[in-house]
Image (cartoon, rainbow, N blue to C red; front, side):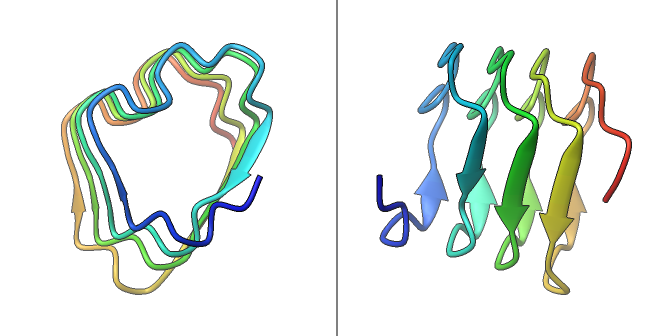
Length: 88
């Protein structure tokens, strides 16, 4: 689906979406606590407008690759805890 209108990911918005493999959130400026937690199949995400990634945002996700923009100023405690992130 078209995600171009999404500018904010609230708490648990995509949490536990077990079949989500990749998502373009290039217009999102903030991901709230647990916004994408337990997205086990998620391997790739584009966050070129991101400013803040809150606590446990990607907790236990399958994330391996993430594209970040130059505006990122905040990555909170355990934002990528228990993930397989290997490239940024």
